[in-house]
Amino acid sequence: MSEDCIFCQIVAGDIPNRTVYEDDDVLAFLDANPLAPGHTLVIPKAHHETLGDLPADAGASVFETLHRLTPVIEEAVDADASNVAFNNGEAAGQEVPHVHGHVIPRFEGDGGGP
Ligand code: 5GP
Ligand code: ZN
Image (cartoon, helix red, strand yellow):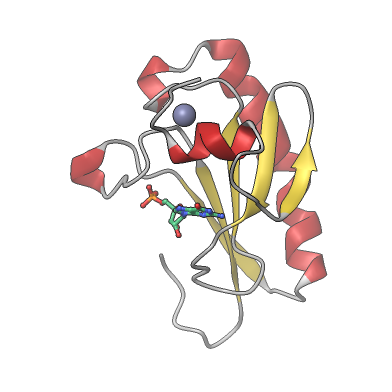
């Protein structure tokens, strides 16, 4: 855990979240400022800043969760598709320095793209 990391504080239960899925390695929760209904973040519970810092097994757990959850999230909000994306590093728009994948449901005619 990184003391000043907001996502580590969510994992620790110090900041409330709306959990979508949780296991020993991964937490998925609704984004506080959703770009679309059902916008979900999938994070490793362990603190790693970027994908390059993430051990392969933690990356596999995150991807497996994205793989299983994405169709469930789409169905839950009746979406037609989704953007699944990582902002990887500050210059790429990563605001929270704890690896997280976004699942952003998309709807026909909404303009598409992140
Ligand atoms: P980034 O720009 O780093 O890829 O995305 C960070 C995301 O985290 C943003 O979409 C933002 O809305 C979300 N976020 C930031 N702080 C919190 C929080 O305390 N709780 C939740 N649920 N989401 C947060
Ligand atoms: Zn963290």
